[in-house]
Length: 80
Image 1 (cartoon, helix red, strand yellow):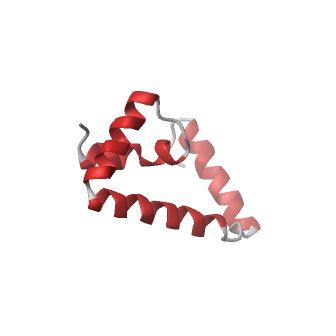
Image 2: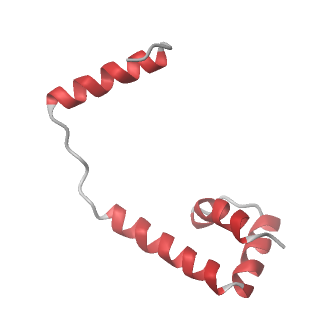
């Protein structure tokens, strides 16, 4: 049996069909016994569906350039 915390950690993999058979069965057994985890999984699915309907974010040219500059600094071990 898995814990509620472990189930929460596995939710994304479960929804995306990435769990192996044994882990999926333990996951689903826990769901069958735990209303709180069923509610959590339902909320996750609703949130994922809502996020999929959002338009992609837009960045100004200045913000994009600054973000890329900071990411390059981070990648190179600097502070940006």
